[in-house]
Image 1 (tube, one colour):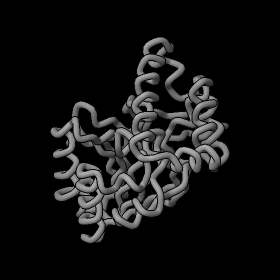
Image 2 (cartoon, helix red, strand yellow):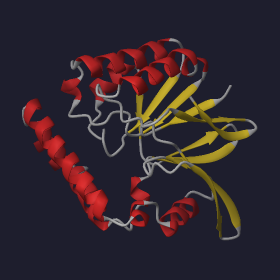
Image 3 (cartoon, rainbow, N blue to C red):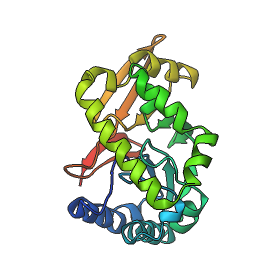
Image 4 (tube, rainbow, N blue to C red):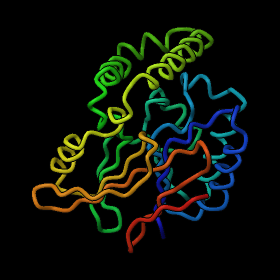
Length: 239
C-alpha cells in the first residue's frame, strides 16, 4: 500500500492537457492509495475560498472529493500559489490541510514534508515577500477585497514574479544547503520530501555523520509525476 506525493501541478483552465492527466491520476492511481499528499501549488493560484464556484475550480474540487469518498486520505499543504486555501476548500474537497513542515512516520521511516520555498533562503527578496503575504493581517485585508480585484492583483504579482525570475541567478532560487541541513538536524535526521524548485532529483546529505535522503518532487508543466513510497523506499514515477 504505497503512499503518494505530488506538488507543483499549477492547474489552470488554460492547460487542459495536464488537467486531464490529473483527473485520470485521481481516478486510476490515487484512489488505490491510502494517502495522497499534495505538497503545495495544486493550482496556478487561489484567490480565496469564495472562488470555489469558478467552473474550473469546482471541477478540481469535485474530483478530489470523489477520490476522498473512495477511501483515499488527501492531505494538502499550502504552497506559494495557493496559501489562501481555507476551511471551505477543505470541506468541499474532502481534503485535510496540513502544516508546513509536517513530520510523520512513513512506513517506519521518519519523514519531514515541506513545500520547499522556506528552504530557498538565498532569495531574500522572495523570503521578505513571503513573510508579508503569509501574515494574518495581510490575508485578512486581501480577502476583504472583492474577488475580481483580488484576481487582478494576483495576475499583476504573477507578471512581476516572471520578470524577477529572469533577472535572478538560477542558483538563488534553489534550496540553500545550510537551510536543508538545519531542518534535517532539527527533526532528528529524517528523510525529506519537498517541491517548489521544479528540479526533481534524489539527494543525499551527510549531516553530523548521518546520511539523510532528500527527494525533490517534479512540477506538472510538461507531464505529471509522483513519488511513490512503500516499505521498500521511495521511487519517482512519470504519469
